[in-house]
Image 1 (spheres, helix red, strand yellow):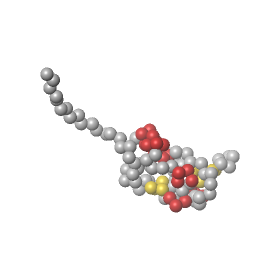
Image 2 (cartoon, rainbow, N blue to C red):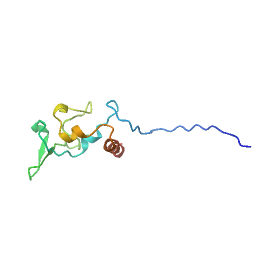
Image 3 (cartoon, rainbow, N blue to C red):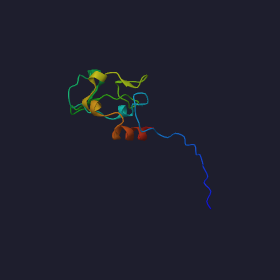
Image 4 (cartoon, helix red, strand yellow):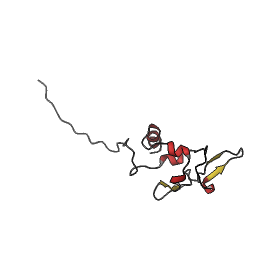
Length: 102
């Protein structure tokens, strides 16, 4: 005869794989972003290297200069680079970047 025992194990800090605007930590905003099309990014947010290649300017903390540090939202959202427009919130790449940085 077997006895069934119910055991409750409390698990803490389970990472949520669902990413929403409410829990986004802007992890992608520390990635290098090459500018390959003109979307109207303001010049003050563009870094140009010696070969003339343009990337989004990252500040000393490694984060994109267009990231509003208080809200963790893009300050140039309507004019953000193409790659930022294509980087989907909650995608495989998004979730992996969050796991690496958290």
